Image 1 (cartoon, each protein chain N blue to C red):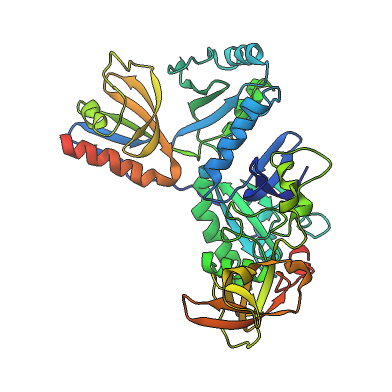
Image 2: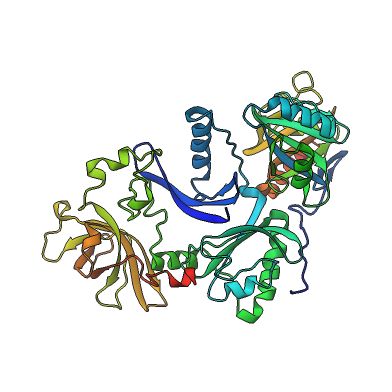
Amino acid sequence: MGKVRYGLMLREDGFCYDDGTTARLAENHFVMTTTTANAAVVFRNMEFARQCLWPELDVHLISITDGWAQFAVAGPNSRALLSKAVDHLDLSNEAFPFMGCAECTVFRGTPARLFRISFSGELAYELAVPARYGDALICALMQVGEEFDVTPYGIEALSVMRIEKGHAAGSELNGQTTAENLGLGGMVSKKKDSIGSALSRRPEMIREDGLRLVGFRPVDKSAGLNAGAHFLATGDPVDMAHDQGWMTSTAHSSELGHSVGLGFLKGGQDRMGETLRAYDPVRGKDTLVEVCSADHIDPEGGRQRG
Amino acid sequence: MVDITLTASSALTANVTIGENHIILRDDLALVSIATPLGGEAQLAKALKKGWGLDMPEARHLSVQDEIQAIQTAPDQMLLVFVHPTPDANAVVQARLNGAGYTTDQTDTYVVLGVSGPDTRSALERICPIDLHHDAFAIGDVARTSMDHLGTMIIRTGPDTFLMMSALSSAQSFLHVIETSFRAVV
């Protein structure tokens, strides 16, 4: 109890179709998040599972998406800021570590849920209150956050940070990729059965030289990267027979001072430091890139665990 | 601790009167979902009766006792609707059920509108696909349907009065759809 786990949803064919978090608020009470676009699909599939696959299980599902207003509070001062908002809850790293969760109250008694999860890769929390208090909560957080120079951040900033951190999103988790492709093969337990686990172990799905999600940075740091470019070995002819993968997401990293990218590369996990062409005939670009870890920033995860 | 308390705000700010018809925001109502534990129908029925004098709701029809209503939302799920001003409706229901049902506060999940007046059925039939004639949809009847494209739960509470619920996040659109249809017929 009081813990959150990141999870993948597999189809029966073993491919990933969604990801999200599951928080255990009580012995038999869980709150699951999905991606926005797949919420209805995940709900439908879980209803099918509980009603048709395992009707003997005493499990019920209900959507609470509209019922809660949830805000990400991220950055090195997020703990200090939240300590001014959350009532009677020890937010120290020891008492409320990374991937912790709790039901609590904020600002003198408003019911809330706090999750220490981080899509940004920073020290971060997500704080939820009943929707009717959402507007009041964000105003209050901005007020108590003034001393920390708090600022709202939107989807674009979040997208840059998740690319810097190597977190998969819709461009990578697109229903055509596997846990192995995403570098998350270890999350599919081999000790127990789960939907999709059997077919995810087909030989073609787990081959060592299959596509793997890795990071890319331009050799010339002033060059921009573009999603959609295909990877070719330097010197190879430009044709599909020599295609080695593709760039899925790119952003300019203000922290690193150059473009960063994520992409799928054949055998990518064993090719760190290799130089490739990111060939983009649509934009008329041909850029030399270096293969690197998908964790462009803080690969040890010290920020989010700090 | 900072001296701030959070104040609830409504999804909609104004009630609407069009001719002799009224659209009223019912943010005084609490909504709590109750799921029936596997094999626990009899125990839940007993708890409902003891807690509120309510019978288990039947499909497509309200169970009512005094100021509380129960709506069947799925074969093993119902929604309690009652006036409750504070954000602790779930705890109140849990206490009375004493473990006989699994509860989830849904108060903030829906916007609830009460609509009434002589032109109500004419306005709603333009945007709702089900037959709202009183022979087909009588007082106390419940349906899950849509208004325009918005998912809606509708309850007939009187000859010309209905209670309607739709997703809170599209509350303004829901009001707009209903208000526009009223203005077209009045």
